[in-house]
Image 1: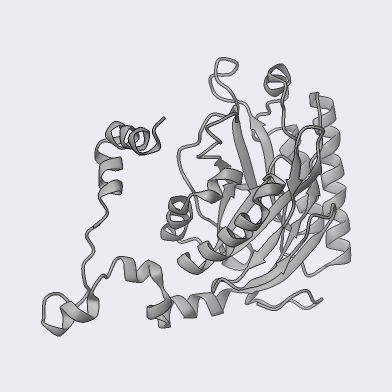
Image 2: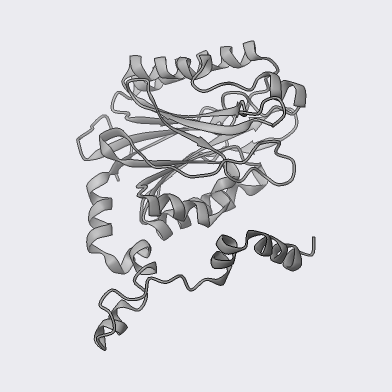
Length: 325
């Protein structure tokens, strides 16, 4: 888990996270022009850091936040489309992977449904290998249609990657779902307010530790005329240790080499520190001692999750009860 160098090897994936300024755009033409600017940014990063395998951009870095509802619908894009092709071309010509947060993806029911908030993972051949739709748009004010699932895709050198967007990263359930699907790196594209900066760094470190995953979080920064954004892009090791972090500066970059073998060895051999294993093998030592199953208990002991799966409305009503809303 070394920091920035010009070296690379088959076991390590070199990742950069970008503190990108939050832009304010109003038209499809402006969005497309911004895509080309981001493509040129990829050119510069790869030229200056030829060892890079993956570049991560923040949430809303493509479109900015569309505060005007008419503009939100008129700029909603299709995937694949012109915007993603600009990013795909940048990845192809630089032989690098990219995680790009697109903002508004046109809903299948457009214009009767608001857009999804979508991110894509593009490989070094310019192919979209993962399209992720934000599962948990902010309940108060984010006009986005919620996605339905997390995903895992084989990334550079076989590293297994999941994408999350913004508010998603505040839900431990989503991190755990990514990890249980096999994710080794969770990429979080964020555009979070400055007042939440410390909490987001804490969340990244805690979720890395709790799920034995690397975390690459890219944060929007600056002021878009309405809100200030925290930046604080960061890279975190699977053991929860901070590998690199930006401040609030615009254009800040952080790099790290992530060892694939170290993570996989830790999951395999350090079972006492593998929460994924321990959660599904509860009491393994005690039960094994008395001959009641050598693998411990696998059953879910958590009432909330059982209720959510079997009676979602009941679980929802419970939230209203305890929140008094």
